[in-house]
Length: 116
Length: 147
Image (cartoon, rainbow over all chains, first blue to last red; front, side, top):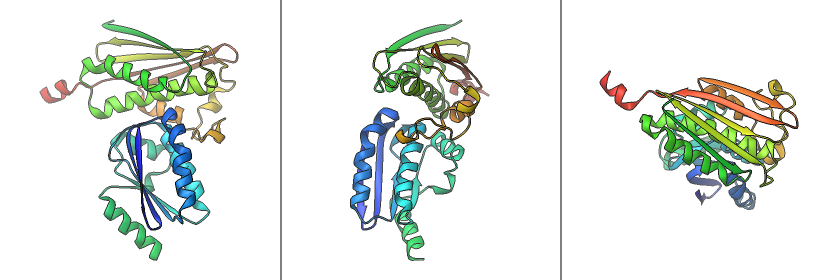
């Protein structure tokens, strides 16, 4: 499991690689959370294109960060999940945050909402 | 029965991936589609994580056993622990119910398992342990191509 965080002003793009389970989530959660809290953040884009596997731990990780973002009325975009992940997001009521496309498109979309 | 395997390991979270790798190899004979395989792995991951986190509180001592049987294109799996057990199974299976919100457990594990498995059964007794049994039918890629 690996991840990268790219900051584009007030947008954090988090790319996840490999397999995300409870064990891996525990390892990366604090790091991601600290990066988010340090920045003047408004949006998180979770790029799941290169994530091969995710179970319900991923839901916990994303919901936890949404809670942290809610303090600043921030928004979340879940980019390019697999079919199985899409179903998991659907069961969890997160379908409306799922988007397909390029990171650039997700950023423009996020800015559109931010700038009204 | 066409094949059978048993895997036992101590309740450490790093063994969640071990369980997924083992069952992935076990069903490889069936040429599963990518979606079938990832759904199957997800069920195993949820059941094994539950045993490690909730059954044993990740004590690194309790034993989790994954027993898989293949009959034709149907694979049945039992994930067993002798941990603390579930006092109210019906409650535990409700979407979003979790006893470990502080750990950011989403409470979606059983909902996901029920949705991805063809059949799922949970037996548990406080102080004795828990067995999650499920089965899933695989529609081989070869068969899809022929039909």
